[in-house]
Image (cartoon, rainbow, N blue to C red; front, side, top):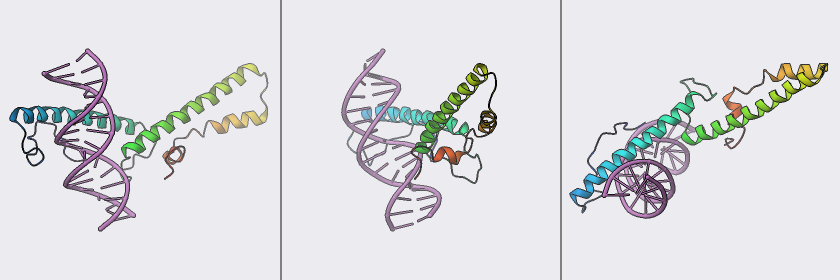
Length: 129
DNA sequence: TAGGCCATCTGGTCCT
DNA sequence: AGGACCAGATGGCCTA
């Protein structure tokens, strides 16, 4: 991260050499708001990173913005699929009097395969590169 | 050194 | 008119 200070800063004279004082004061205020807006956006992204099921190990580089969004999207898709499987399982339990041994084995193993590994999500959709 | 990622500045557009 | 949002431009930092 670079400068996190969102306090008012004078604008760069080299970039705007012939502008009025009034204009420069306005630009300074607009720039401050824009910096704050981007910092808020980054804070939201950081909050998303904190709940993503990838390793929090400090030895790994922080996820980029685009990787964070793609990973989150894939995680949501996988959770939706898991919910569908669970619904089907519950439906089976309540509609069939006897479960086959194959079905029982499937349920017991499926519950252990909910994807908590970041690498799984990473290779799921759009993050193969 | 090239490429990826990022923060910041800027002007345009839309909304209130 | 002012604020929010957006995309393009620019320059800095880091890594392979």
